[in-house]
Amino acid sequence: QVGYVPQDPLILNASVRENLTRFHPNATEDELIAALRKAMAWGFVSRLPDGLDTVLGDRGVRLSGGERQKAYLAMVIAQDTDLIFLDEPTTYLDIGKQFEILELIRRLNREGKTIVMVLHDLAHALTYSHRIAVMEKGCLLAVQQPEELFKSGLLNDVFGVEGHWAAEEKTYYFTPHHK
Image 1 (tube, helix red, strand yellow):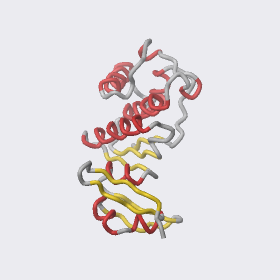
Image 2: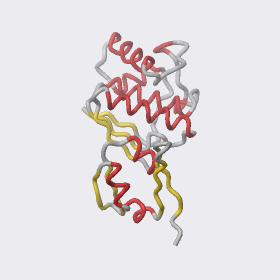
Image 3: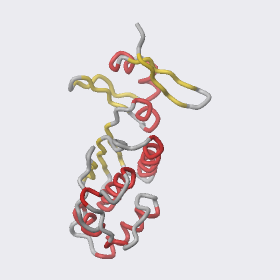
Image 4: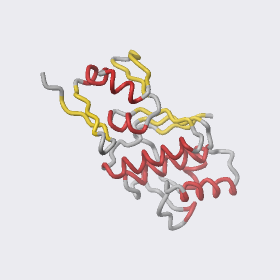
């Protein structure tokens, strides 16, 4: 009922088919092929020379970090749940791959999926979220829309940073707080 991508996903040393069925155990062959086609059309899986029988290798070592994250997201998409939890979906990725993954997640949301994700990159959280929950030491401090939260100064206080809005680039960025 709920899709989940952990911070450090475990990809089986098995084929794409076996990894997909791990998340969608009652799927028919046609449903697996449809899930794979959907993942490929969305750019989640790019190079699969043997289709469903492509072996991903131990923990997905035959894939780059970005491809591994995409493969894991594809497996979660195969479940076709309305709610997806993502724990640090951009971990270990270079900046270009981070944006690529976040854009794919944004697209999932636009297609009607509810996405709940943990992000430690404040600029990414502000840019790619509709609402943000700020926690400190296990306590929920606020749940607000990104612009309201940014203007409140809470992020500066909690994280010891100074937030900046570059209006021309429509970009948030943070610098160390100087006292």
